[in-house]
Image 1 (tube, rainbow, N blue to C red):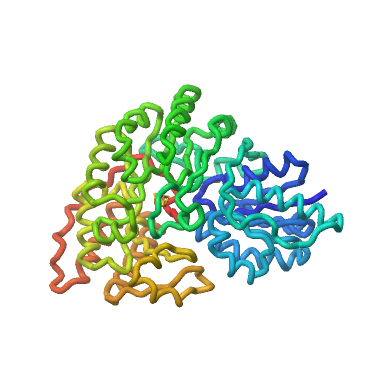
Image 2: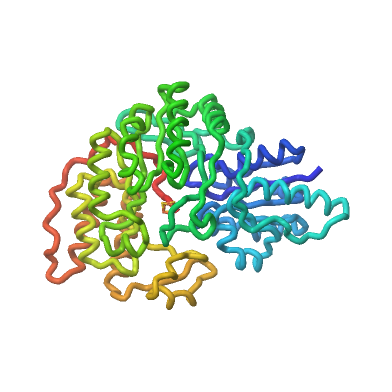
Length: 457
Ligand code: SF4
């Protein structure tokens, strides 16, 4: 019997769908699967030693870096195991991962590829096939999904929870209703893999996955779709059915600014069906940078979305990339001022004020003529292309801001305290130091809902 270990290193504080979904496919075909979430548990050495296949799920950059560290250890424990990487960042880093020793790399819709790989390894054990990858590097095949099998994953209380004022934290489950994206933002790692496509997970499968997590104690559900309104006709019936069956369960979604405007008639429905947080990748408060990133929205669009969400009673959780090669010190000051004026200073997670543009393998950012000079600077440790800002003050500001946010979070400073520290720091970077007026510090609002896992990439 083929023994398989599926490993997740980090999935933004969620119980990993990327383990539970393929586990269902492989177990249904009779393979023995152990799921290991290293964000919560340690590596079970004995199980790894006996495995024929160890497959690492790498949906994001941080997960990939952590998986590369674990890979070497797994190789030492079991030099004979077939080693695979799957998920969004696998095909992006194919060359590097193959040099490391990975034998199979699967991106896009990976469940059918993993199943094929297991049948192939089964045949190899019987001596009838070679070890060569025959599965596509990226599959965009439309799959019939199975209900994810979460039986051996850590319980939901071990993962990020929804915090909301004085209410007790709500246990949070995680589902995906779509994967991929039909848009082409230049900095986004989904674009080179899905190339403007998205794929749905069937409604009955999504609802059954919600049902099993509610049974396991979930009071809140995160929809992990890159953009929940890519398929609005798929999304709306799902949240209607969710609310009808579980009227007390709340949820959060991620929707781009452009879609929040285009489908604004659905915002009241989101609220009515239990949506409490809408995350939106705003990225910049500068139309020139938004155009370079091909975001297809403007600052004015974002301001309109802030008003629409306020009117609908939805908490907006904006995410940003304030440090890019095109950002400036005055731009950062204006960014903080705008957040303050829009009433978003406390609603925005502090780490979002300290994000620096990541340029990964396959990045569409190289379409921008100025960026081509960075294409020689790939760092095999950090797995990104390194870049320096033309104005060294901006790199200093980034280091200072990151330090203030990290130490503030470690010291449990409130969001207003961290925001004020950043405000003061940004003020000192211009001469004379007077570009920003003193911040009228207000007591921190604590009554907005948020997930206690602030990271996002
Ligand atoms: S940033 Fe969001 S909207 Fe843009 S391509 Fe990526 S997932 Fe799609």
